Length: 123
Image (cartoon, rainbow, N blue to C red; front, side, top):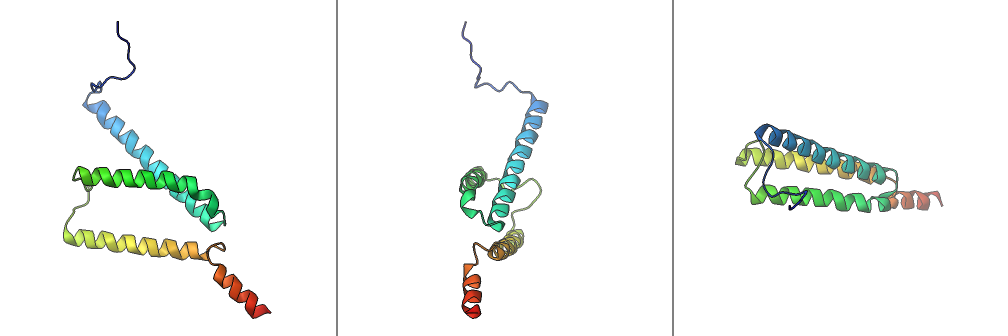
């Protein structure tokens, strides 16, 4: 008798498959949001050098998700992929990156030029 814990055959019915998909989706977005929050907090508190591991895991998850979506021709369940929609989504992403960079620049470790200027002015 051959015993194996892994079977290539899908043993889930449709309802279980949908439930598994929801669990995986929620788990991924929980991981993504948690890693993003951890990296931003570490950047803002001046511990940017400690965020390397989180950055690697975060980017691996992002690259995998984007690559698989592109490979399979998927966009989203609720969003369309028209030219206008892509322009709006790109604009929203640009605003988010601008705000994030503004927040990170406010962190003391990233804006050392402002501290150096204030030291020179104080002398």
